[in-house]
Amino acid sequence: MATRNRDDFTQKTVLEIAKRAGWLCSFPNCRRATVGATADDNNKAINVGTASHICAAARGGPRYDKKMSSAERSATTNGIWMCRDHGTAIDSTDSKFTVNELRMWKREAEDDARWRVLYGEGTPQGAATKTDAGERLRVAAVADLEVFRRTAKWPSTSVPLTLEVQGFEESVTTRALASAVTSLEDLILVAPPGMGKTSTLFQLAESMLADGRGTPVFVSLGDWAMEDLDFLSSILRRPTFHGISEADFRQVARQPGVALFLDGWNELDSNARKRARVQLV
Ligand SMILES: [Zn+2]
Image (tube, rainbow, N blue to C red; front, side, top):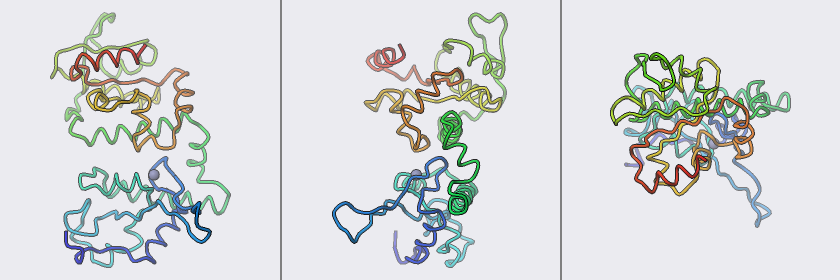
């Protein structure tokens, strides 16, 4: 892409964007610090933050808006401060995050930064999520589901599904099942490919969140099988779960309400199935 057609931020604008967010990442739940002193040079600081464009700086970039003027495109209002990981996530050309979403994050991060200056901590919402691991996990799960929703795997159906469950007398709606999931030990959906298991899982997850009954955490087994990680590490390395430690997760998962949704058993070969079985014990 020709750089001369880019409406980049000036140094001054970058600084302004960073300062408005208190030099912390604006991605929901992240708030990672992005500046600090270097270890080996008394005069220097490291900066792992980046000013990302909400609407792209150039044609072809994510969320490019051709109706914007060059001045609007390179203005402070069109920039959002991100840590390196989240900057990469939202700047990728296949980024699924919307303009409205990014504007909302920017506003929340800037409110948070102002509260931190005025009262010594973030906004009440921000402060509350800092202390309650369960709430932070729930917020992350919502954001994570949102990411899944934007991928091709998200089922297009929005019709409430009905399914037969072993041990249940009659067929049940996914909504009713969602409230049962939190009390059942295990729920395994068995059906040949293409019968709507993924749709069912997503509807269960959404129902669970809507009722506030629990926190569904998705694992796409096909993706997981390509990584050499256990389920928990594979979940926590997702950008949406930044800021949640393994200890947090284990603490929350000890109480009822966290459900692991494993999707795509059919995609696993026998070795991967063996690995998965071991981890589920
Ligand atoms: Zn971040």
